[in-house]
Amino acid sequence: MTPYPTLRDLYRQFTDVLQNGTEQDARKFLVDHFSELPEEVQEAVAFQFFREGLAQAAAHQDGIAELRKEGINAMGRLKEAKRILEDKLKLMELEGNIKS
Picture: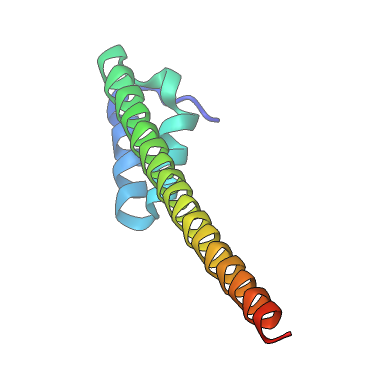
């Protein structure tokens, strides 16, 4: 990590990354040069990364909740299918006893 003599140089380097690099490159640049940024910019960057992290965590939790819901629904359907099969088996046994 090469320190930049002025904020203007840092800004120019960052805009070059934005124009020619990827979003991942821009994120890496911000992380690598975080301590060189003015405090108010550090706060804004940290807050944005925090917000994005929360959004990703919430999306992940929503996905987990949906999977759990689908699992519970599937268990309910399996229990119902088991009950139907058990009822049919009992009916077949009764019919077999009646015919005997």
